[in-house]
Length: 142
Image 1 (cartoon, rainbow, N blue to C red):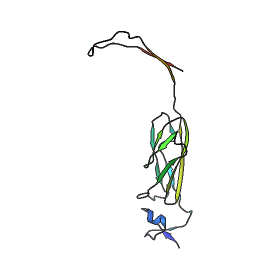
Image 2: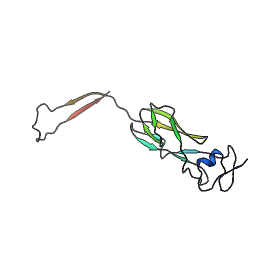
Image 3: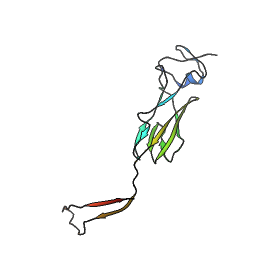
Image 4: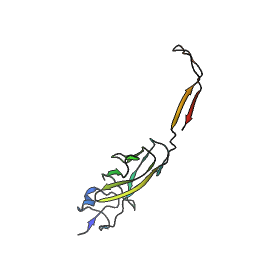
């Protein structure tokens, strides 16, 4: 049995095998789901990038619900909407699964992480709440 999909909008019913008015036959293995991202490199802990699902040939993902997961959630987390957050140095594969299809992309976190060995200030006296003072702080990295 052939399944038909619309050239403009693809919904879950078309992917699940229900008949749908449209153009062109959909054969198993004939449709590719892709994950796109503005960047695959996050350069700071806490930085984020939004992942999107995409079909080729102008088909849209409107109404398509995806389950997102990270292969390394201690390095990169991903929420239900595909928002990726850098948590630690390293890389992770982010996979989206939707209507029996899956796609993935790799996100790398390359953040300059500096350990602090000590912090020292030259300020020794106290000031009233509304006074101002210049304070020099020296941070010694590991």
